[in-house]
Amino acid sequence: MASAAADQDQKGSVRLKCSVLTRSLGDSVMMNFSPFASSLELLENAKARIDDLDRALDEFSRSEPYSNHIEVHAPSGYQCAKIRQNKPIPQAAKFAARDAFHDLRGALDHAGYACTCRSNKPDRKGGFPFSKTKAHFSAAATNTGRDLPTEIRELMKSYRGYGDEDGDKLLYALNEVRNINDHRFLAPFGVVSGSSQSSVKIQITPEKMAALQNDGGRKVLLNPQFNPLPIMDPQTNEMLLAIWDERLHDTPQFEVNLHVGLGEIGVLWRHHPLVVLRTLVPKVATILSEVETEARRIGLF
Image (tube, rainbow, N blue to C red):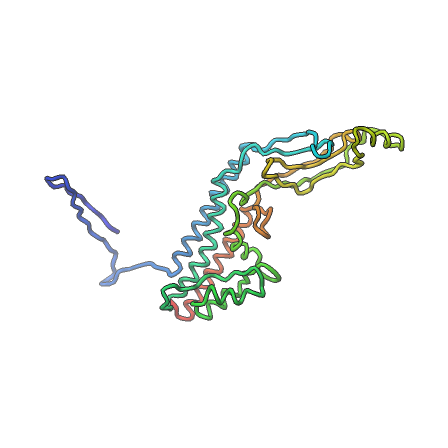
C-alpha cells in the first residue's frame, strides 16, 4: 500500500514525498501470489463480460427489434410470412460475447505459459493444445507446448481439444472463435412451432386445378411450406417463415420463437451464447485447477 504527499516550492514545482507501507510478520513481508493469477483474472473477467452480455441481450429483446409482415413472396408470387429486424444487435452485446470467449481461451494459454517457468528460452512455448483433427492433435500439442514439462503437456492433451471424432467440440470452439468475423458473431435465429395446414378456400377439382394453373402462370402450391429453423438474412434483415398459395389457403397459423444465437462458429452455430459461455466457465475453471494441482505435485511451484 503506498501513500504520497505533494509540496509546492516557491517556483511552483511539485515535490512528491512517497512512503511505502507493508504488512509484515516479524522480518518477512506477507504476500499473496498465485502463479496462475493471470489465468484466474481472465476467468473472472470472462464471468463479468457474460453478465454484461446478459444485460445487453435483455435490453435488446425489450426494445421490440422485430416486426411481423405478410406480403407477396417476390420470387414465387405466393403469399409469405416474414420477420423483419428493425434494430441491429447492439455492439455492446457482440463485444461482450467476443471478450468472454477470448478471455476463457486466454486463461488456458496463460496457465500453460506459467508452467514453462523452468525453461530458460526467451520465447517460451506453453500454449494450450488445439487442433481441428485428432490426427494432427498430438503434433500440434508438441509444437505449441514444447517448453512445457511432459506431465503438464500430457495432462492438457487429455482434455481432447480437437474438433472431430471424440474431441471436446465445445472446448475446441474456443479456438475457432478467434477467426470469426465480428459482423456474424451474433445473429438472430428462429424456431417455427405449432405449424398447421390452413383451411382450404376451394374444393380442388381437375377443372379448378387447370384454371388455377393458367392463372398468371403460377403453379398450384397444394400445401403451405414452413421454414422450421429460419435465419435472418444479413442482406435484407428479413427472416422467411412460411409460403402459401393464397388462392387455396387462408393464412396458416403458427408460432415463431426468436433468439440471438452464435453465428459462424462451427458446432456452436445457432446456440445461445449465454448457455454456451456458462457451460464453458466451469469447464475452464476445472482445467485450471487440475493443471495447477499437477504443477505443484511435480514441484514447479
